[in-house]
Length: 101
Image 1 (cartoon, rainbow, N blue to C red):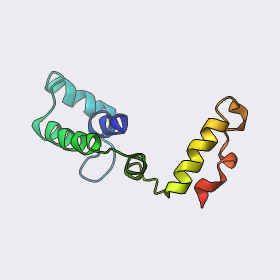
Image 2 (spheres, rainbow, N blue to C red):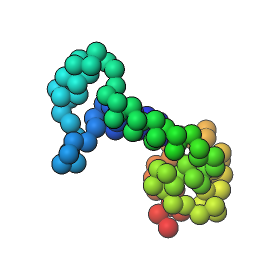
Image 3 (cartoon, rainbow, N blue to C red):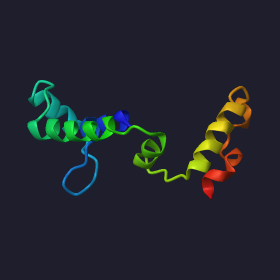
Image 4 (tube, rainbow, N blue to C red):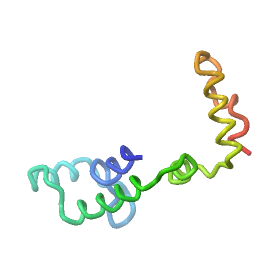
């Protein structure tokens, strides 16, 4: 979650028309401020990081990633991972049938 926050906030932020800022512009902004964050960026980043750090349960983590799974589906996913941790050839998406329910 932190990686996505970092990439969305600094590496490829959205501009006013909701498209990604070109990398040339990202570099120009970085160089203009000598690598320091703009005050607005810093404030937004701190608020988003605070929201991440207060998450204290697996269902809440998954929900913040856009995965609304029941407790049963989460438990089944964890059990599936333990059962298949040494069988990488069986980790294709068709093996996880319950995630599409």
